[in-house]
Length: 449
Ligand code: SF4
Image (cartoon, rainbow, N blue to C red):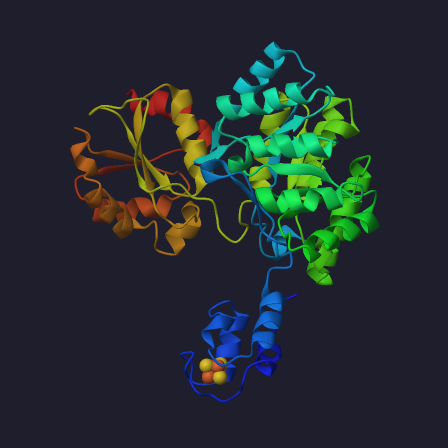
């Protein structure tokens, strides 16, 4: 729960000495409450008050990093129960399960497919985040060989799943530089695991049979000074998983209950044999608070919808999705190709560029920065009017790209036509269709004439 300025002020020296750069302790406290200053900037606060305030001001759900470098997964630090209250910040990592009992060819196939899986949507790369390497063979050498192979052939981060604590930490030592998540850490192996977790500096995958046991294990790890962990209460199906994830999120955010203030890990791969049910459970866990979701197969028929769903849930509802302002070349246009213009609202861009591609006619697509507003809203606010578009034409030297002087504008922007005829002298302004889906027909009939 957010700390108020008045609560912070109670723990400050209240001498108004100004050494923090603020005129009063009250002003400093208010700034801390909104995240604009740090407790440490007051040189006179007592160590006890400083420690208390820092603990109270730390995020209710800890930020946890699994992996290293560009492929690290960062989860946690969420602030709301529902996306519309603000936004969700760190999308859950998707892990694909690989067992050391699988045939070598199958392991090679999966590793190649997972690490090469890369799909772009609205300028964002959608990908699988983690390999979940499972110890099922009972042979330490076999499991270590799998871990070595994953290190050598991919750059991904790992979840190591192994019920033999010695084997688990031997494998973790092989890939410690990748900062793997080691799972499960539970009541049974807690005392053996704590020194190894500290030594290797790797995050812990806490397992408990139910929330009470999770709290017990997480509290022990916290008391031992281990803060990087994710939680699993062992739900057996989607409903139990949603219930537990919700209780964990609610306890952390609404009650400030620190032992549950961590991201969670869920295993739809172990809950259902039916791939469709597994996929539905994964989608439910994306919506309801999972930090990591482990799936059984890198099957694109299930992965692509899940990745797009995750992308939608974790986009910021306060900001429209946008694309870069520039003149896009669709299918290698030349000096005779049509020029169309629309806004940088991502959906406008993708629908119009897709329609141009469908038309099979190369074209220039001018994308004007309207801060994500659509055609009519941006025209009303002056971001997509005659003057703004004329400035865009000058900035990107649009007239040098073609021999003709015809500009196709969205059909819904009739009033813009008059403005442009004034602001772009010498250009013929052509009203395009109202619906982007009619662009292929429009271009083939109107432009070819
Ligand atoms: Fe108050 Fe500390 Fe700032 Fe001085 S430095 S004004 S004591 S908050």
